[in-house]
Image (cartoon, rainbow, N blue to C red):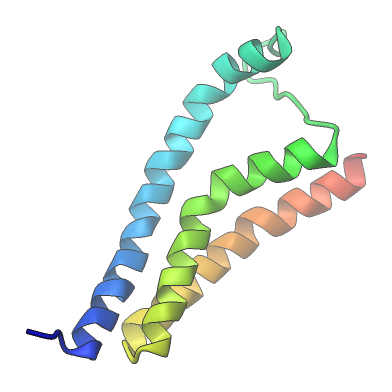
Length: 117
């Protein structure tokens, strides 16, 4: 029994949109894990609550940023695959949402990075 290609495409598009919830949960985990990870990796944390730890080297910064936004990247890939298989508006809305969120989170980080280094 084979599935209708449009049904599979719509399923991919819905899964893409579910990745938004995954991103929210992942971001909360990422924020909560930041201080313990700093202590483990670097042996210290910022001295005052609310201070941030700035990663100076480009390699670790890129890796950290990619780990943070990986649910958005996966969601974008799923939405593109769904659009290629004919999922229509649902897939295109997933592409738009994931693309805008990636731009919203990545572009300011890169600009901040270039200004502060």
